[in-house]
Length: 310
Image (cartoon, rainbow, N blue to C red; front, side, top):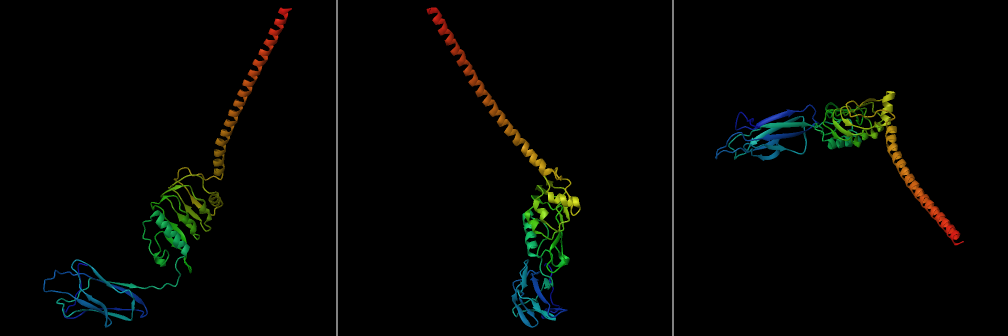
């Protein structure tokens, strides 16, 4: 914006044109203006913009060290677009232009990406605050798919591969991944994901590659994932995690670990009750013995008394 183009003849308009390959093709144009001179008190620069002989915009007065952007919200079309920047009668300086942007409207024969996939990947982006250039449609245009994504090339594209390795992801594996029903490859390796491997990953019917290595995942792995890994329908990587249990007996071990303390507690309570019961019985018997001894002594005393009287 520090440089600008002006007409060779300052009394003439500044004109340029764009030849279109297809007259029906539509464009959006953005023009940028900034004054590059320090104008004196008696100098002024004011001009109008014309497109194919029709006034396109109100008079423009470029500001010093400030950018003014001129554009129309309606697209334009034609085999030749001829622009003319014409200075007004009160202007002492010719028109200038610092920059021009032309955007072509592309029509795609394909439908947009599957809406469930769009909502799921946007949720994932929001939850993990993914710092990638993820804007617009995730799959279209096909040559500009989102970084780390691969999509199916059909009428309504779906996500078939998602690579978020080394992306600084933190927290648990979010349930939104379960909505990517066409996903075949999922790489979440070398992040800081915590918690256990969720059961909902077994609900992805097309998943054949799952890399969860290099995280902080603990606990048992869903039996469905382990069975797929064992029968060869799923590549599963869990290395560099703190002791994930990949054995089918994991859940059994967890249940046993729960049952043993519970059983020990029950036995302790029973022993306590047994000791109390033994104590009560022993105390009762001791009282009974005391009673019998006393009764016998009284009988002996009575007998002794009778002998004495006789």
